[in-house]
Length: 282
Ligand SMILES: Nc1nc2c(c(=O)[nH]1)N[C@@H](CN(C=O)c1ccc(C(=O)N[C@@H](CCC(=O)O)C(=O)O)cc1)CN2
Ligand SMILES: [Mg+2]
Image 1 (cartoon, rainbow, N blue to C red):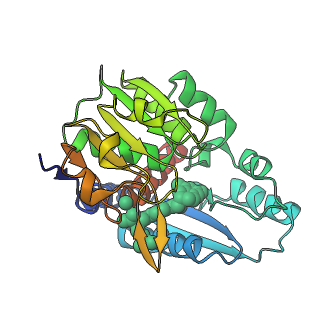
Image 2 (image 1 turned 180 degrees about the horizontal axis):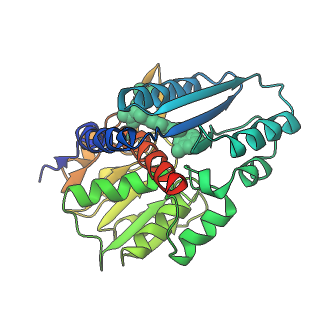
Image 3 (image 1 turned 45 degrees about the horizontal axis):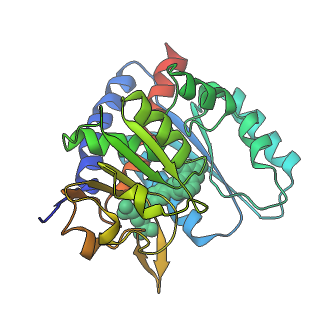
């Protein structure tokens, strides 16, 4: 078997074209969606993602403002900036790029963002809504994964989805979303004993660990759909958590890195920003 390679760039592009039209329709009603991004510190990867977000907003006609703050910024200063943005009529979406420096409490910062502007879907109120099945902003990467599966007509209902990784930004919210789509969901993590016994059962296998090529062909059931959320840098090159060249001969569908899930993360952020503007301006 040779897997279909899922082209996340193409699917993200199609979504962005749809959003561009929506932004134009909003402009006709004198509404311009606005996104504020707060970036703390000098991490080069975070700077690169934020530039990607800025450029994506520009290409759609979304207003964006980036706050680039030094790693030494205090939690109080950060909270002050968020409180101002909560009140700003130009801003519909607020995002704090993660990770934050260790002297700042991530949970206090995320809790300060107005849930109505929380386009990452990380505020506890929105985390609770997702768990409860109430409408809310869906976290961008998990939502992107669902979109990829749906675009490729990969069935979710009744399927066994195995997620390797239990982070708050990918593993846990993705489990909630897959459950909403009636999958049977297993979450594995670094302390899982006999990981392969679980991954081998997956109809949909999601790798979100951040460990280079940790999913090898012998861990994958023949015909499974394999989604690689991993981002690892090797000598400046990006590599996922899945041994792509080997696993593509076992899976029925597979996402590459780069060009798989990554572009969808930004597309879903744009989607949430447009949604936020529609809700706040209606
Ligand atoms: N507040 C948030 N912080 C972080 C999030 C998030 O959703 N919200 N996710 C990640 C980083 N991230 C967005 O912030 C992100 C990661 C990767 C990509 C992407 O487009 N990847 C490309 C390759 C890009 C490259 O060459 O470096 C790909 O995979 O094809 C976009 C966004 C952690 N923090
Ligand atoms: Mg990718």
